[in-house]
Amino acid sequence: MYPQINSRAVAWWPVHVYVEARLVAGAPLLGTPAWCALNDHDPAKLSAVLDGGQHFALRLDAAQEAAAEASQAVSAAVDWRAVAQEWMQLQAFRTANPWARREAS
Image (cartoon, rainbow, N blue to C red; front, top):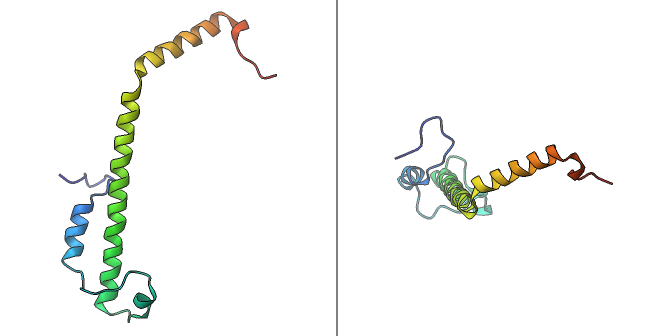
């Protein structure tokens, strides 16, 4: 269900489950003046850091999903085999007909 140990894929749900059990109600948003004013040993300060971490994991998870969907869309957009064959034919033509090569002027 989760990525392999050596994978760089980010799964948000396990992060959320871990963080949810450790959140302190009413903790200020990470990095705000209220958060900065908290004592470094205040559990609310750490809670806000954990919450920020889970939001970052969600962002990475969503970006991975969007990239995968975009990759599938690109793959389905064109008959890539036909594109490759056309490119190979063009290269073969240019090799056989050097006069047809484009050159910068």
